[in-house]
Length: 178
Image 1 (cartoon, rainbow, N blue to C red):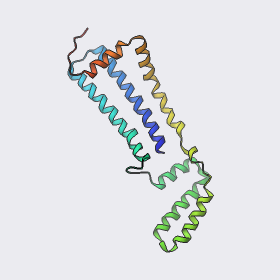
Image 2 (image 1 turned 135 degrees about the horizontal axis):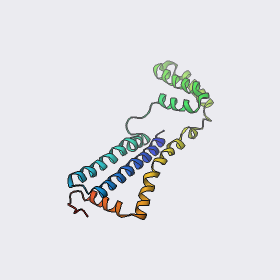
Image 3 (image 1 turned 45 degrees about the vertical axis):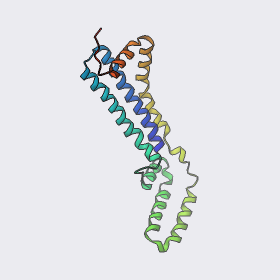
Image 4 (image 1 turned 90 degrees about the vertical axis):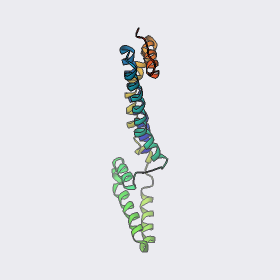
């Protein structure tokens, strides 16, 4: 689950970051803005990429590393239920038995035996097939357009990216319009 979220986060961060970078560089190249506008564009780019990185990449990374709030067993079972509907009852029953075991320590041995029996019956569950990595890779199509445009511009008209980017990075410096 978290690996899927991390891959999706990387793709979205790159897609949005590259798109905004391209827009800002081209606007500056053609607009020759003043210091205030370039400063706004520079910091908005940084804040946007930083915010998207935290929201779509760092949060799932913390979950993957088991830091902070994690998804519950019930949420995980719900995700698995979507991928393996034929095992829905067994997963839910096992979770209910685990809750009963915590609530009723006297019957714990009997409940543990039932849990063991249930887990044995669902053991050959192919968990890796439940990870929809292909659905995460669908976000790669959003990276392609800005990346292709940047590569084409750098190949045929490199000054549009290099000069615009230089003026944005050196946003506190005055530039004489050509």
